Length: 101
Length: 285
Image (cartoon, rainbow over all chains, first blue to last red; front, side, top):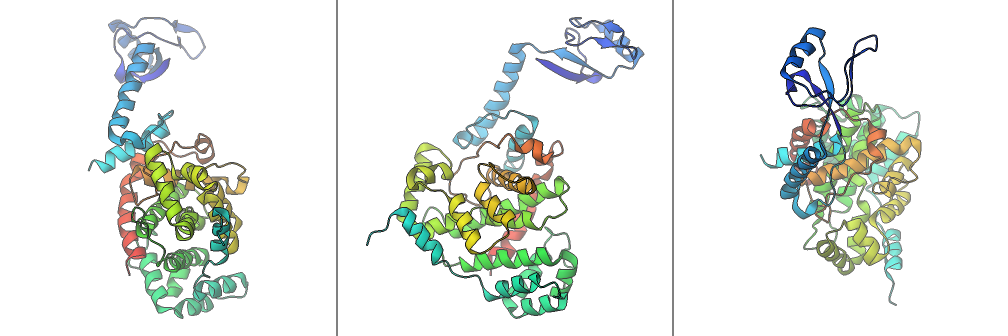
């Protein structure tokens, strides 16, 4: 699974899912590169603001389970489906945000 | 003679009360291309209770003219013929059913509270997607479940079975109606809309607000907005839809509506404020 992230979320150990290319299409960093601290400077020098990293299946599953368990504990048996896009998550977040007030 | 469920429902629709005369006169005048705002204002003014309520609703923050509308003529000028006609219609329907049968677990006032919340949410969706003809968005939401009132009125005990079924099976009331009655409120509401000669955009929206199948292109956005408005009202626990479930949104609505990101969390507070205000205006005499 891929995730597009901004430079402010940079962390050593992330794995590039897509190569970083310059404006001529030349590969500057190939897919699969494990990012190190030195790459932060590289991104800053080249003005690269966002990049795509690989998320492990475990990470994705952990995140999804965490989100859904939050919805389930709030809505209980009223909810019998999992949000499958950002709109559906936002819809359920609306209830949590305003009913908790 | 013992009537079966379908016969009872058809009989109930046949015997439905007509809507108050002010609405009938208004509809006729609005179909006349020569009708002036003064003529329309005159018709509405024949019912002073309506005038008072229409002005209250027209001045609500929901329409954005808080306290600036003093007369029916001004209301027509600011909100337009169609919006005024729909306010009159909404108030007429609520008034017509004010003495509806009461089920201990599903009171008409809670039913209307849910319908008003759906009307408000649907209109917010309409605004967010840049819809220019917003007048049917509120009315579509208000009327989307009208079939339930007829079913309660006509069937009473059998409808208690429906509600019991939703609680036991944790399903939506639409599914419970299909199972217990072999018919659902969307079908019944569609028949009512036909009897009252409502515009096809409204009658089709009532018919298809759960399934969204076979909705014509011109009604697609309205039907999708009402479908979503219903779920929004349920998420925010506004009123009573007859069951406690939050149904999954139909996956097609996202591509037909093109809502902005974070629409729901940004609009939730306004919906709650408008709801509190509008409930008082429309349901309290």
